Length: 243
Length: 243
DNA sequence: GATTGGCCTTGATTCAGATCAAGGACGCCG
DNA sequence: CGGCGTCCTTGATCTGAATCAAGGCCAATC
Image: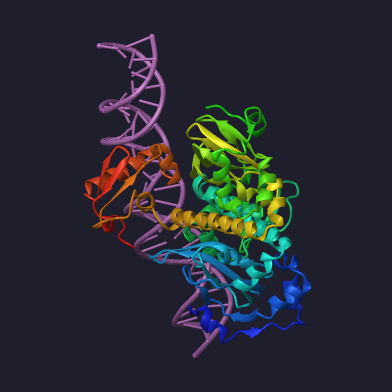
């Protein structure tokens, strides 16, 4: 697994093409939609596009944070890493989403998590300082950013809840209902496990072996059927008895 | 343990006295310091003062959130409560601090935690809507609020780190060094356990029995001495070998 | 077709921390 | 003084999930 830092990454990065589809999708992202055209154009001048290969680390926890990122294509894992090497995946972020934007306002300006590519990816690198300057004078964008960061905060509170007052099995069943391909019909539904098992296990704060055993238990109890990455849920209500 | 809701609480609440020391301490709080005098005066008209007795619940997780709070005196516990009745204390907030301010920007406007008084307390109730309206037109206050909520977010990430890649003993030693009465001298220091043991245990996501045993282990190993609420640390470096 | 390596599952065992049960130690109140 | 409630500690036992160890499955490569 290679490691790059933000500086070396700059070597591969190029200015963003101002007439690209990427430019438009950034423009429409809710963190930028509140900016007026002139402001956004100004910001765009400072945005560069960088590729990141699968397995490469964009930044480590504790690195100085001068940028946040928008994912054009690919998949980025945000995680905490113990001195022992154990890893806890906090979040996996995909195309069209941003990560690292909350760090711009933290004292110290260090990333609180590490970021690694789970797939070959294309990222837009947005300088914190420029963005902060712009939204300072833009109430609409400020409000959107406040809502965005508040949502992150709420997500973390839910995560802590799962970790402390729920057990591994409940975390898995929550994960399953959060990943349904469509709404349940007739108390039945299908979930897709679109990530490697070990990444899902880390997200749930369990070992891959435990994930395997829990899925087996649910299968043995006749609650689900597992076929590779597809989990067919025979009874959502039996899967989640306390809803 | 009594339970009130925000509505019934209103009965006891009174408008804030505009020439009180309380008015000044609110004025100087960083969430309000960014407002100009006229704006703050406007906001103050909507702020009321409410007493809360020890054991009373101010709001439950899931309640509609229309207010956030500033603590004049007292101690408020913010917690998650499982259907089984198990409780996880997320944070204990004391005089001069606010809680619930991030909720104003969340979709749904529900409190993600419950709030209960650990001591008789005096709170200022600040209406979200009024505050949000004011900071919308105040870049400085917006930036402070962004920093505030980002710090909360960072705290939660650290909490998750403690819960997932550290064990109970490490959580306790972290708690101890976070609660030193002054900086270590000569590798020695003193920590105060200012909360009831069961509240500390909940904050650390362990049982009171486990807390007791861990303190005993540290004592047996000669690393600390415990005298009621005071923990004397004979060797900070032995307490925290990985710093 | 054999070999290698990545990924996942399965079984056996261990362990950290919870739970259950039984006392202290203290303050408070009659 | 004795009784009582609250809070904390201690010991014995249990258990959910981790760890250790082995093997299965499949795709890529030679």
